Structures are given as C-alpha cells and as structure tokens.
Length: 266
Image (cartoon, rainbow, N blue to C red; front, side, top):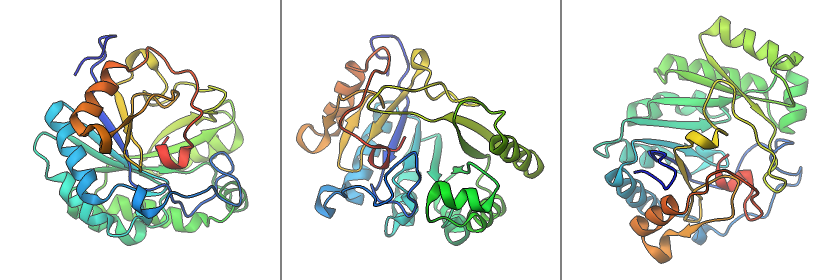
C-alpha cells in the first residue's frame, strides 16, 4: 500500500495494553499514568480482526507492543491467532524482557518469530534507577530464554541521551557482541516537543522511508508517532480506518499531544 509520498506501508505496530510493570524515567512518572478502562481496551477478537484486515490490505509485518505486552492476560492466545494469518511474513514483539523466562518458549511455539528487548545499562543499580522497579537479572534470564527458544534475531533496544559512546551504551554493546545479539540505539524522544532522531541500527525515525502504522490499545489507527492524527477502528471499521491513515500519513513527524509512550507503543 503506497501513501501519497510513495512509501510502501507494510508494517503495523499493535499496542495490546497501556499497562507496564516498569516505570522507566523516560516513559512515565514514578506514580504511573491514568490507565484506560478495561472496556476501552481492544479485546482479542477486535485485535485479530484488525490484524487480519491489515494483512489482507498489504501489511506484511506486525509487532506486538504495549505498555508491556506480556502483562496482558492470555497473550499467548492472541499471538497464536495472529501468527496463523495468511500473508504475514514478519511477526515480532517489543518487551522489557522480565516475563520472557516464563513465556519465551510458549511465544515461539505459538508462532512469534523474534523479540526486541529493552536494556539501557548493564549496571544493576542504574537499571533499577532507570526502571524504578526493575531487576536486571530477570531481564538477562529472559534474554537467555529467548535465545534458547529460538526467538531470533534478538534485538536490544538501548536508550541513549545523545551518543552510543556513553558508558552504559558501550557496556550494553559489549554484552550484545559477546552474546550474539543485535543492538539498536534509540535517542531519548519527546512526543510533545517533537524531539526525535533516527534509530541507529534500525529504520525508526527516518520519515522519508517510514513504512508503519500504529494501533493504540483503545483502537485508534495512527499514521505517525509524532502526529495527533488518528482514526477510530470501532467507529470507522478496520479497513476504512487503515486506508484513511495511509491516505493522510504526513510527510514527516511534528508533535503528538494526545498520546504517551505507554499506550502508543513507541
């Protein structure tokens, strides 16, 4: 599906929850954020129908995000259903890794192909400070479980302030090299101020080649992370919402005043 700037839109990121078991300093305040009502969040039948429609229209890649997707109850069921959609070529998940030691093998068996895992430092104290509640050992066990399950390639998302030469980023890169992992450096962003940069080691943030749409956990198709444009699936239907989002996808990002990272999926 081509947008008006001749970009092939073939990637859908699906946020399945606005809830997270971390409180990362660059994502939300320590006390958390107001959560959506359960009835406002898409159920599995709705998510599956949207995914199926999207693939039928030309989406080839789906990534499950959150919040933290593995806190969503019965998430394996949804993964299994989406994985069976004919025409889906690339199926992944972005996670903080805490629950991968429990779910990695089930996710692989259900049809998930690969994972991106957040890891900003190798220092346990700094990790706890960044996430406010996290234990790095749980994440490292999750990474190992993902490797053993065959969820490859494993990509590590490392948030940096300005440069991949920062001490924590260098140490994470060393860990990745020693363990056969791919690293992606993501500079801190600000939705409301419109601060974003291209991901180093990935294509995110490169507006001229952006190929993605986002589905928020409450059913809005958004054509751009840094835009307030959104199309309500429940009101418009999945196909119309998707086609409108593609038709109105902006040439480049500006600002986003209506979403937070916990419910749009980054």
